[in-house]
Amino acid sequence: DTGVSQNPRHKITKRGQNVTFRCDPISEHNRLYWYRQTLGQGPEFLTYFQNEAQLEKSRLLSDRFSAERPKGSFSTLEIQRTEQGDSAMYLCASSSSTVTGELFFGEGSRLTVL
Amino acid sequence: AQSVTQPDIHITVSEGASLELRCNYSYGATPYLFWYVQSPGQGLQLLLKYFSGDTLVQGIKGFEAEFKRSQSSFNLRKPSVHWSDAAEYFCAVGSSGTYKYIFGTGTRLKVLA
Image (tube, rainbow over all chains, first blue to last red; front, side):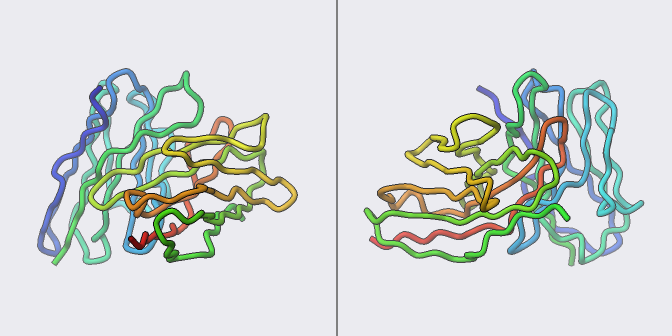
């Protein structure tokens, strides 16, 4: 059973640099989510895809953030001109439209902006 | 406003003792409720979920939770805690047709040998 895979697991970057995270969902899942988790907080919703369509974006997702899911398979989350406040764990989850409610999470990509 | 409150940031119990983690929610629609567990360096794993029906739900690893609509609560329980249960636990709420689940801030469980 292949779960949700995220890469890289850790990324350290300097302020102002661009970073990109990749998420490979469970293959039969058509729904994909990005959440952000900061220290001492629960996951916060960032964006949601159904197949290749991005259906919702949180106001947390400033114009420096962009997410894509070409062909409805893997997804990328890019952060441009990173700021120290972007330091967080970025979690990807996927789910099936035929099974209500359950999100399957990856192990996350931890971003540290120096 | 929609929210999930986990009032206990940290809980410490002895191995073999019983456990109850509290979760209260505020949500406009009929809620779907979830408990997830996160071990260090791991992703979130679903312990159990409530959609409808029997208000006492059983989950994995011996956990159960009870939905109390009148109290807007969904507390997680385990009769006998094992050292491997040490982790962070998150309560979450959603509803039919939504994809924007709201998570609580988590409760970190420490288990004493």
